Image (cartoon, rainbow, N blue to C red; front, side, top):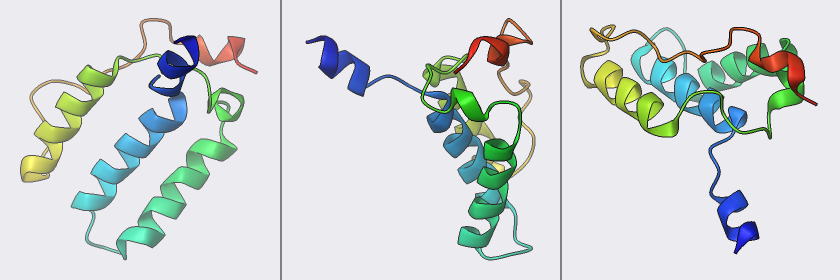
Length: 94
């Protein structure tokens, strides 16, 4: 049962993927795949790289709602992007 729960966990990598998909869906300057590769490289090369498989610091439901609001019209939603309560959350990764 624990394995099943861990397999369904929303990870930092999932969080990055959701944000990248939202941005790239609304960015018309380059092909979608190129956009996704570029944005994922930024995340993977940043200070959060060791966190990719850790649980996301932001709840999945909040991220999904923000992404949906953003991609509906490709305009910044009224609500800000959900951010972690602890701005240094990534320091404990890896």
